[in-house]
Image 1 (cartoon, rainbow, N blue to C red):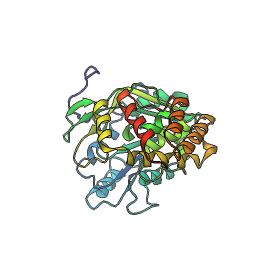
Image 2: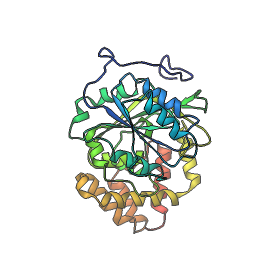
Image 3: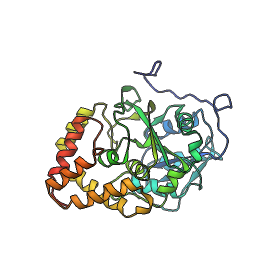
Image 4: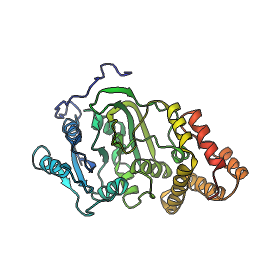
Length: 334
């Protein structure tokens, strides 16, 4: 572990925030939690929320059509440990899927609240919310959108730490966000301005809420804080929707084996969806999207000119950038 004293296995620490520990006053952070057949690991996540050093939070949750005990676990939490700061969102019943479920939750939080995404499988470090809010500072209620994210401990199903997620190697930005997501959902905290941007502006099909938040915030000229500290324990198990690997090279190779079609369909869908709301974008994002819309219907030369003009269209490492450029240049016209 790169952080001294990091635990090899997570154990809950029941810590209540105080002024000396940096407890905040003001509007609570809205923690969004969508559950779906998560009974095996859900209580660990809830334990880690209760254990936050910053205790100024409210959980907003919805069940996405579970047929296990997930909803019963949440109702018990709402009645006992989470009493007074746990709210079920029932405006969109039934199965929505991950991204739409989180968008439904986002629509249900109070205006002016900061938002943290949580995942039923994973566990937060006790410092997670405190670090995020301290990093935002006065910007938490400022006009410029802010997205905070961090690295993770990658664990097995029993939460034994196997590795740390890959370090952030390039600065975040909109062009880079189009090529790759670096903001893992359960590490994200959004300020109120970022929440307002996203509230009625959901992703296209096939794009998860975390990548979409990163795209929209950077497209609007917002600030992305990529914390080099590990802020959560990312449980790797057979039921992961996405999963993670600590090696960027391995991830580049895995992407190369998958081929370009799926990625380029999503890439083009993001371009189209973002372009539909130009009033929410800054001038640079509008220019990048305009060039991309034009070149995606053309051949290699037009696409190469766009890569040369917008040099920020890169991924975190050279190997991953090479894969992206090959896909971008050689995929079929759209």
